[in-house]
Length: 151
View (spheres, rainbow, N blue to C red):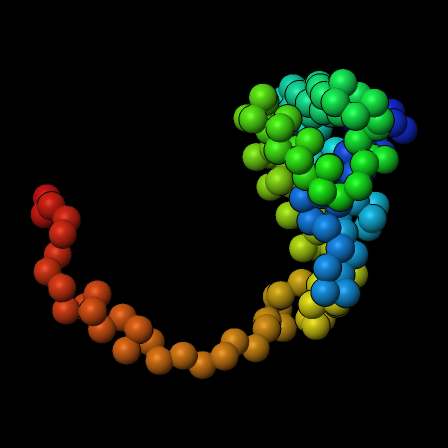
């Protein structure tokens, strides 16, 4: 695996905290220390780690030009503004990063426990699902005419 430098890891952690900030008793994604695991997952895709590193460098350059600071040292609103500006300039930077951030965050046992769930795999025990009225929820779909072509 190509590893990130300490500075890239700090920038990535700040980006993760911007994507999923601390709220409602939950820790932000970067504060959980997910930067390394997100980078490892991204590194599994050919060329993606280079794109991540390039994107982080471009983000730092943008912030240096605008504010004369490092991204991680910015206040939360300024981080969000800088990340939005960078996303406009490089539309390919955020989508994959957001995907991997959400996966890592919501699989973390600390987050699962903070959400009031048991931090365990869903199978074989499963999770309790609230009953629903399937018949009334699907009534309009079952009564309408087919809208597909028959072979």
